Length: 73
Image (cartoon, rainbow, N blue to C red; front, side, top):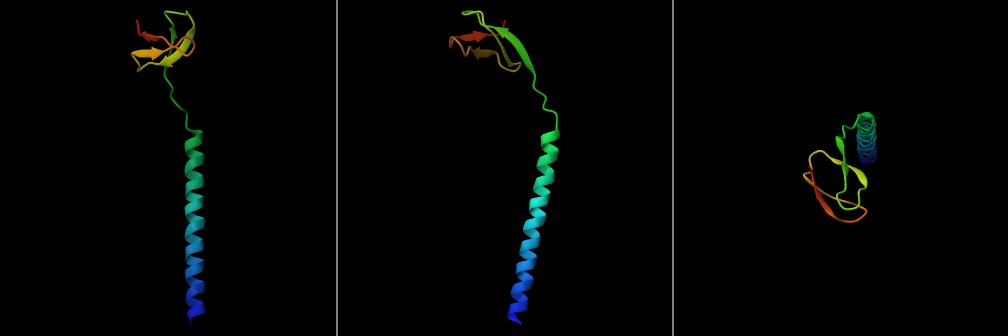
């Protein structure tokens, strides 16, 4: 009797792991196909005149080339 109960518990746990894996797989696949809305604007560094794309939400940004802090005009 105890072997049957252990077998049933093992099948139940294995099945729940497989179901959880499949749900996570399909959820991640759907998430990967979503289009990512990245809103960037073109900014020119005031010191070195390099052009970079920065977020539209940032008022200040740091130039990766010369490390100067620039402000949105």
